[in-house]
Amino acid sequence: MLTRRLILLLAGSPTIQRFVRRYGMRLGAARFVAGETLDECVQVLGRLNQSGLMTNTTLLGESVHDEGAAGEIVEIYNRILDRIARDGLITNPSVKLTHLGLDISEELAYTNLRRLVEHAAHLRNFVRVDMEDSPRVDPTLRIYRRLHEDGFTNVGVVLQSYLYRTENDLARLLPLRPNLRIVKGAYLEPPQIAFPRKEDVDRNYVQLTERMLLEAGFTAIATHDDRIIGWAIDFIERRGVPHDRFEFQMLYGVRPALQLDLVRRGYRVRVATPYGRDWYPYLMRRLAERPANVFFMVRNLLRG
Image (cartoon, rainbow, N blue to C red; front, side):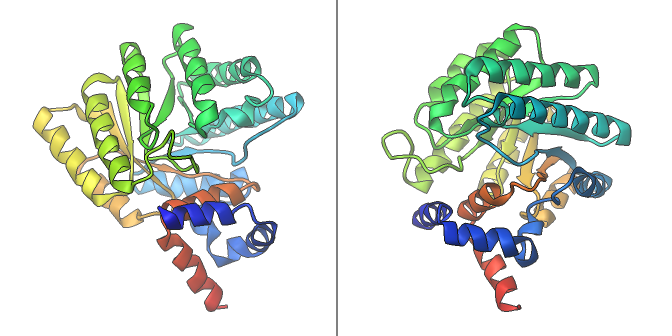
């Protein structure tokens, strides 16, 4: 946890940011980001699909503060949906509400997300709404609930096990039979609102996932943790959870052998495969989640 906090703090350093933006792709960022353009990303999505993996994709970026720019992001995502349909990819978009204008107004984010979800429904696709840092949890859940009440079933949301509040958030969502992704959490939060110890985060993750598998409409188990994956498989098989009510989700470039092994064992696996020029914040959160990735990039640096 200390290493994670240190990486997230260093992520704000202008010197480190300039260095990583200049050399990051060459040093190994391309392992975690599927290119800077949609064409580059589509090639990666196709390869993953051919190997039996489902995918989602995200146009990297967040915290848009201009209404016109937020509208342009919606149009880009609609074009992504069109490209997915045209190429027959087993892929759905995953979006951040700050990218759609949440920091301008909640109503704008709702309107923009609704446009995207409507277009996805027309193409028989699905939109996952990512969860961001703690101040944005309430508006994100309100917007998700509004869309569900509007009759949209092709939209899901994310809960984070490191927040104390998530147990109550889950209880309030379950009557909707929601489509949920459970993650541990990738933002730097104070101990007043988030578990500071990894073992507590993991314990809460397991408890939340157990309830989701039994009571939610669909559960995306997003983890690379062998112990949690083993627990989940044992729980699913013992309790007879239908295989069409859950899937495992992992990140592009992280434990690809495990992803393929789960597919061979008959489990659905979806790989989060982002792209875009604004990849620096995403990369730093991935390094913070798994410090071994830092050593991977350092090795590439030392190799010259």
